[in-house]
Length: 235
Image (cartoon, rainbow, N blue to C red; front, side, top):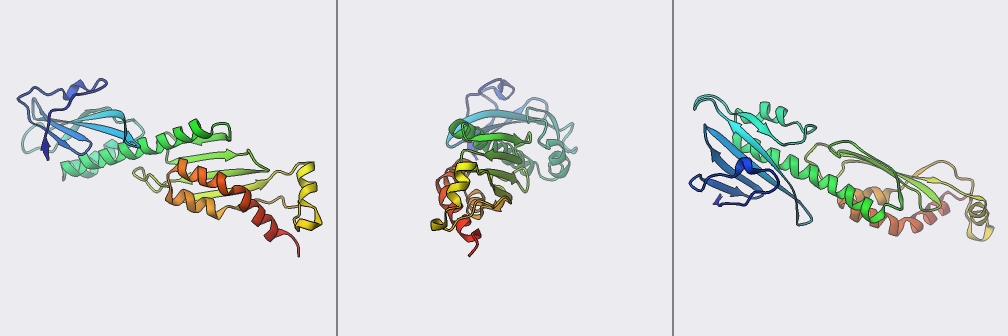
């Protein structure tokens, strides 16, 4: 741990420790001893190397022999800090502090990934839905000759990559597209109406951040559709 005095941001003056107080900086956390057997923890979150919000949590112990409790915090209400308090704080305060930091950083990471795809590709995305902690994300891509539905689920609230992924392409042929696909010389058929999985897209979402995976999906979608139509075409 590195003793450090850090400037506080955005209403986190609860951790503005007097100079004589000992303050520790550990990674993205600043831990400070406060008056009255209290410990203040400030969490600095970031995305792509840029700082995001600051959060804080104050821990208190009524006496040396009693377990610590969370006195106050600015952790979003939909993140389970009370459950983590019950599970970890009585036995391992540092593990509790670290877990809350991981929880906050993962939430910010998922949220910023969604914000970035909206910023970069908002004209292509429709029906974007996400849960409050961003551990369920769904959207539709309909800027092509098909509608692509993307559904992402995360194993837990400290995951930054999804574990349950579904990417389906739904053909949306208009009259001209159908006529083109029915040409005998290209071997395609315009009669396919059932959706099909885009496995390459699911693989990209499983291993890349959402903005990177989205770019990969869009780049390779025309070729993937063409290959799928050829495979489904009657011999």
